[in-house]
Length: 304
Image (cartoon, rainbow, N blue to C red; front, side, top):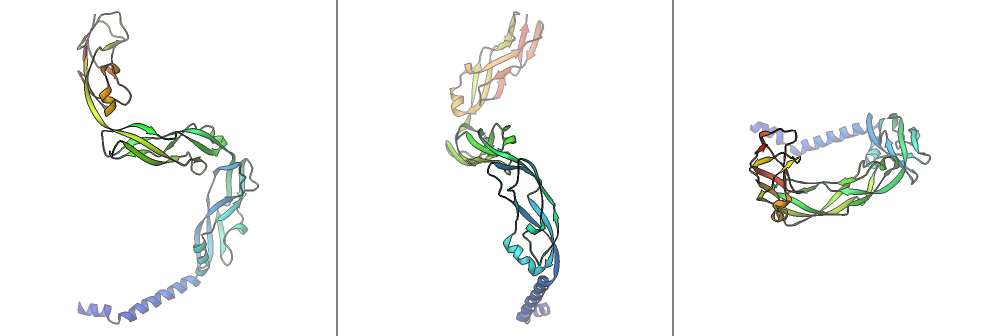
């Protein structure tokens, strides 16, 4: 073991110099050796008329096959070149542009071997805008028994985009409002507006401030009478029992104020002849209130 440590660490400074010298020689070899490389160059679309917009294009970047010495490629790493495609002569409809070697941001001594694709195809449309409704989706996560009882926000945005597509868009949504925990009665979040396609559409504003009123969940047991039969029948119908005990859940304020008159219980007896049956009931609750349990689950129905 001592011999190994002696071999590794004796004359350490000379060994470090030798390693650095080897790396320097390797670096010089890389710089002056000829290389063939593939790079991706983004396309910058310039000089498009203000009343036009690019509705569709087949590519946003080029793949270039290049050849040159290592030192020749250093400026490309520093400048991050772009291909500028001049759209001064673009017109409504489909346009095709052949990519020109002379307009490439790659100059001698680097040699351009190939361009992929060779053509850029795009559809030009008129730029239009309109005011559309904004919907804020929301969901709970992590803590059950929590409700949003009120959302406050500017419920419209001005949407910009291609005329031919914009006419079919009737609303947009924002990011989802995530409710992770209960930290008081109010929650305020800034949410991004989600446009149909970020490459062709944008909105003003691009984000909105949303204020949400939160309430914890409560449950309540309530007796509901009478129970209706549908459709109304001239036959004599006897229900046993003629009432139901419901356990419901929902936002605390709504559950506390809810009366039995706000609930409908219906039993469907359509297409039934005289006789005795055990049938479930359809329970219609106010919006935002949910059924936990109904007792009984089946009702004895006698049709005479």
